[in-house]
Image (tube, rainbow, N blue to C red; front, side):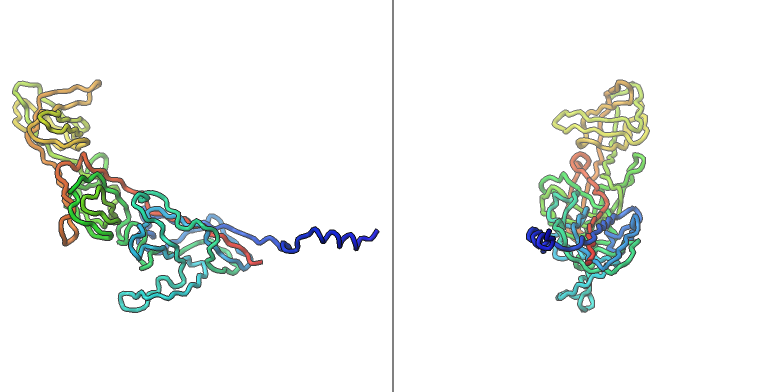
Length: 380
């Protein structure tokens, strides 16, 4: 048998274009998020993370960026926030740059030099508390890497100016809030991105059901809010902000000789919808006793719905089962909170009177985070 001729015939059915060894591939996921004590994203400082297990690169390889996802990043509606500038210390990124930008001293900026630039595709306020995919296309070349063993990944991520690209550009502001529910004319002037706003009142922090007022509160606007806009988005250095819904009601008895009314923390007090007044309810914040000899008494109430107004009859609902309603209290007057805000050293931009407890809502976003996935492919 002529095996030589048989081998030559077999070659007719082989594809010589796919004769190669399989190249080794590895995946590296970098997951960075701010915590209560570490704020590398909102302060634009270095992060440093230990790998779950060491990454062994035994051959000269190429690194590619597969995808990049962020949460709590700035909206890309100003030039400096149009892209992320990422540096990984363990990667030998060699990217040159030609730029007209200069630093405060008039020198050419080096922010983009030897960095990875990733377009910021966060361009809508509706995605404020959503994850944003900025890089979904596979295999963007990053750099080459020599054989090594990696146990830690460190670096920094900023905007194009070297400032934070999460929770605004102020390095001390680490928390994002959405304040919504404004009606027409309550936002009276234009609020621009990055503008410093001072709230004279209306906010506090909550602990064990008690609200501690913060006055004044200074924040930075994260998005543009035109006059008569329904909401504003801002960043603050204070965690767990709440709307200060505490009002002081001056209550009096409508007649003498009634059984003393005892108000306990957690009891509810409601205003009847009479005379065209809007009904309101609230939770008693302190213990008080209204006797038949009391002409009036001041009580702190945390308003849950509506806005109390003077001159309407109110009812007190105690914590009985079922609840017992005791009529006979009249709201003599109500000191409602007024939320007033100014652009720092500038004009008034927000004016909300009486309706803040019932009308507005405040949502705090989760802490900023970004996740990037890299593929490492050996050259051999």
